[in-house]
Length: 330
Image (cartoon, rainbow, N blue to C red; front, top):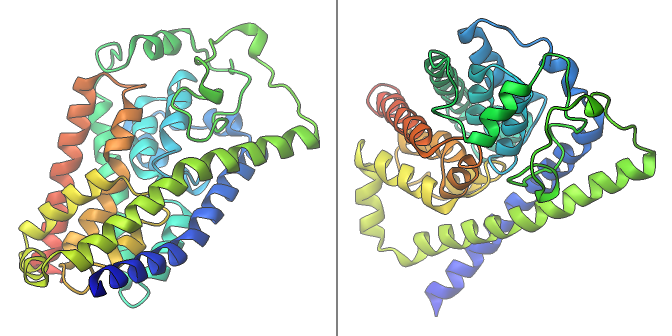
């Protein structure tokens, strides 16, 4: 009974700490639906693959979406004809390299600022490297789903879908679960919305994202509380102290629980006393890039072979960078 009480107390504390940041992230990303003209941004993307991948990795500062919302945005970017390095950089880095996630990480690890800095640096490096690697693939048909590949062939520099690339929040297929819009001349000019229509759009997106992400947050908090209170302390300490096994364990945990990057730092904080700094970074860097939920969403863009390549490269780079932290920084 005492273990159950401790688990429930820890669950509530994690939930109360993380919920404000989830609310803030959902609200801000929803407001951006009507505040940012992303078409102006798309026209100014660099053509150099390395610079494009780095720029795409930094777009999260303008489009602060977590790993639940970045896939629909990346999908729309690709169908707009954006260079693949830019789209890959955004897809992998946006859930981490954005002001809300950086702020929440700082709140959780304010006494360990190196965690905050290295999380951003490693995410930028990994996303930029992978984006640059994929730039050598000139023919996109082998890596993209047929519908997306057809959309890129029809895309023209100044043709727009008529919908915001942010519209639809976390929907796998873009606008309210409907099929992606084709690049047709009738959709060149986006429809102008009234204030009431904009307000309804924001509220609808907030409600939808809270319904989807709130459940994930509750589940992640419950898993963290259960692991901390029900797992024998000796086992946690033995796994957390090993410079290699601790990284592997936290990467597996990050991929399996699918917790939102807006609040995952509070989950990781519950392991800070027993796990190495490198393993905490592995959780914070790898989780927002690849988890069970995001892999399912990525299948709406990429063929399985491309996702395997993305996953393998991201796994190796994350492991190498965080292992370096365990041996030379911690």
